[in-house]
Length: 102
Image 1 (spheres, rainbow, N blue to C red):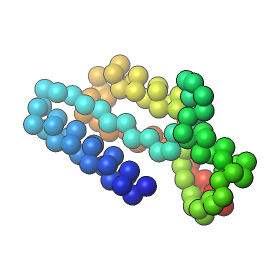
Image 2 (image 1 turned 60 degrees about the horizontal axis):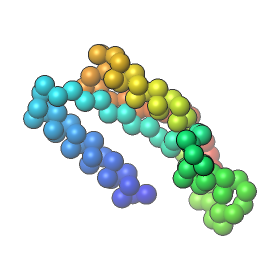
Image 3 (image 1 turned 180 degrees about the horizontal axis):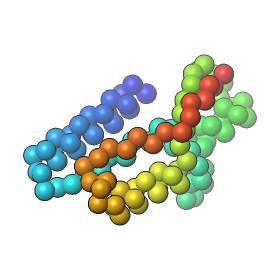
Protein backbone atom coordinates (compact mmCIF):
# COMPACT_ATOMS: atom_id res chain seq x y z
CA UNK A 1 0.00 0.00 0.00
CA UNK A 2 2.86 2.39 0.66
CA UNK A 3 3.88 2.34 -3.04
CA UNK A 4 0.25 2.94 -4.05
CA UNK A 5 -0.07 5.97 -1.77
CA UNK A 6 3.28 7.33 -2.93
CA UNK A 7 2.25 6.98 -6.59
CA UNK A 8 -0.95 8.94 -5.92
CA UNK A 9 1.00 11.70 -4.16
CA UNK A 10 3.58 11.95 -6.95
CA UNK A 11 0.85 11.99 -9.62
CA UNK A 12 -0.95 14.86 -7.90
CA UNK A 13 2.32 16.77 -7.49
CA UNK A 14 3.05 16.32 -11.20
CA UNK A 15 -0.42 17.66 -12.04
CA UNK A 16 0.10 20.78 -9.91
CA UNK A 17 3.60 21.27 -11.34
CA UNK A 18 2.12 21.10 -14.85
CA UNK A 19 -0.57 23.61 -13.91
CA UNK A 20 2.02 25.98 -12.43
CA UNK A 21 3.97 25.85 -15.70
CA UNK A 22 0.77 26.35 -17.72
CA UNK A 23 -1.33 28.88 -15.78
CA UNK A 24 -4.13 28.93 -18.39
CA UNK A 25 -4.73 25.24 -17.74
CA UNK A 26 -7.15 24.70 -14.85
CA UNK A 27 -7.16 21.50 -12.84
CA UNK A 28 -9.17 20.07 -9.98
CA UNK A 29 -7.85 17.21 -7.87
CA UNK A 30 -10.31 14.90 -6.17
CA UNK A 31 -8.82 12.80 -3.41
CA UNK A 32 -11.17 10.10 -2.14
CA UNK A 33 -10.35 7.71 0.65
CA UNK A 34 -11.33 4.01 0.22
CA UNK A 35 -14.11 4.01 -2.40
CA UNK A 36 -17.00 1.61 -1.81
CA UNK A 37 -20.31 1.08 -3.55
CA UNK A 38 -21.95 -0.51 -6.53
CA UNK A 39 -19.80 -1.15 -9.58
CA UNK A 40 -21.16 -0.78 -13.13
CA UNK A 41 -20.67 -4.53 -13.65
CA UNK A 42 -19.86 -7.20 -11.10
CA UNK A 43 -18.50 -6.34 -7.69
CA UNK A 44 -15.25 -4.51 -8.34
CA UNK A 45 -12.07 -4.77 -6.27
CA UNK A 46 -13.17 -2.75 -3.23
CA UNK A 47 -16.44 -4.62 -2.78
CA UNK A 48 -14.72 -7.99 -3.27
CA UNK A 49 -12.09 -7.03 -0.68
CA UNK A 50 -14.75 -6.10 1.88
CA UNK A 51 -16.91 -9.16 1.13
CA UNK A 52 -13.89 -11.39 1.70
CA UNK A 53 -13.35 -9.82 5.11
CA UNK A 54 -17.00 -10.19 6.07
CA UNK A 55 -17.49 -13.76 4.84
CA UNK A 56 -14.24 -15.01 6.39
CA UNK A 57 -12.53 -16.02 3.15
CA UNK A 58 -9.76 -13.49 3.78
CA UNK A 59 -7.53 -15.43 6.15
CA UNK A 60 -5.89 -12.44 7.82
CA UNK A 61 -7.50 -9.10 8.45
CA UNK A 62 -5.04 -6.51 9.69
CA UNK A 63 -6.16 -4.71 12.83
CA UNK A 64 -6.53 -1.33 11.30
CA UNK A 65 -8.87 1.52 10.72
CA UNK A 66 -10.01 2.90 7.42
CA UNK A 67 -12.31 5.55 6.06
CA UNK A 68 -14.77 5.02 3.25
CA UNK A 69 -16.59 7.15 0.71
CA UNK A 70 -19.46 6.11 -1.52
CA UNK A 71 -18.62 5.74 -5.21
CA UNK A 72 -21.71 7.79 -6.10
CA UNK A 73 -20.40 10.70 -4.03
CA UNK A 74 -17.06 10.45 -5.85
CA UNK A 75 -18.87 10.54 -9.20
CA UNK A 76 -20.87 13.58 -8.07
CA UNK A 77 -17.67 15.34 -6.99
CA UNK A 78 -16.19 14.83 -10.46
CA UNK A 79 -19.34 16.19 -12.06
CA UNK A 80 -19.36 19.25 -9.80
CA UNK A 81 -15.66 19.82 -10.52
CA UNK A 82 -16.43 20.44 -14.19
CA UNK A 83 -19.70 22.30 -13.59
CA UNK A 84 -18.62 24.85 -10.98
CA UNK A 85 -16.11 27.51 -12.07
CA UNK A 86 -15.06 28.09 -8.44
CA UNK A 87 -13.73 24.53 -8.30
CA UNK A 88 -10.91 25.43 -10.69
CA UNK A 89 -7.43 24.92 -9.24
CA UNK A 90 -8.73 23.46 -5.99
CA UNK A 91 -8.22 20.11 -4.30
CA UNK A 92 -11.05 18.25 -2.63
CA UNK A 93 -10.55 15.49 -0.08
CA UNK A 94 -13.52 13.11 0.01
CA UNK A 95 -13.87 11.52 3.41
CA UNK A 96 -16.71 10.16 5.51
CA UNK A 97 -15.81 8.58 8.82
CA UNK A 98 -13.11 6.31 10.17
CA UNK A 99 -14.05 2.70 10.95
CA UNK A 100 -12.03 0.27 13.07
CA UNK A 101 -11.42 -3.11 11.38
CA UNK A 102 -10.82 -5.91 13.86
